[in-house]
Length: 257
Ligand code: PEP
Image (cartoon, rainbow, N blue to C red):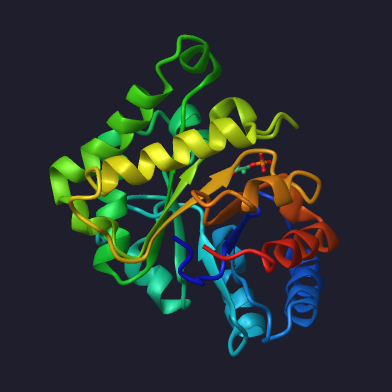
């Protein structure tokens, strides 16, 4: 059922940019997306540029966020950034469990669950990344893999924790590869994710958004945003080019969820 809710587009800038880059990027984004735009947009930047995002984007409809968070409140955790620190910079979105982190830094599903809970506790919106790798897809076990990633959160904190949250279906084989999932694969997995969080419709979760991420760009966006099961996109590489990112946001405006 279409509820007339605008799509949401989150940019993941990863470890890119500089003061000069973000100065022009953020201003261009603010100018390029006027306040009448019927799409929600968030931008997840490296930590050092959150203050810059806060000063340039405040007062606009564009939200900003981080790509990680500590699971701890404070204390002897060298190199970590706490939820309260993110609150200080007006952060709205926090990416949790991105595969580039879980693979390179061996982040466990338990850790990811605690981070997800920490984001919610401090009134920010988690963008939880889930998805299977190529071996798992070829073995046909993508549902089991994704279900396990979500169920660990449900087991620890209950399904209601998914209210006001975003889950990004990001098949690892599609990230940065120019090989986006097909509309059929995306529809299947996004519907599956909604079904397990809603427990087959028994437990309707308010304001849960399921988005797709993985080589999404202005060429494949329409096909993917046209799916009822897809509430928007998480955009990596294509968000680095401001004109491309604005184009994707504009394409998303023609669709509702
Ligand atoms: C990502 O890493 O979150 C992502 C979606 O990357 P890309 O768009 O580059 O595949």
